[in-house]
Length: 67
Image (cartoon, rainbow, N blue to C red; front, side, top):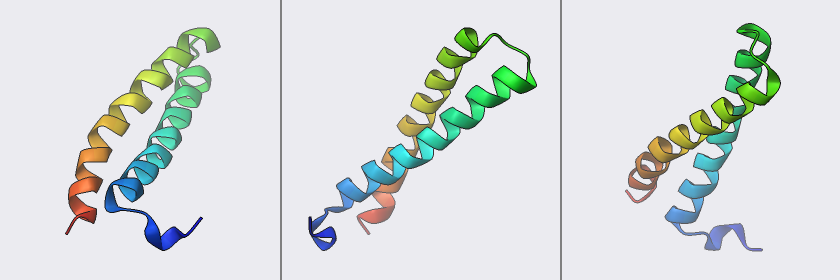
């Protein structure tokens, strides 16, 4: 795959996904180990936080990469 052929939207989507997965894993571990939540209760919390981070990061990165 030619990395130079990616469009700005592709780059924004991939970077937003990377950031969201990191935030989701961090929040899952923080809720599980830090807040002493049960792992099955902390997992949906991490998924929701990751989704919110992705929803906020993707439009911002797309606007930034289109310049």
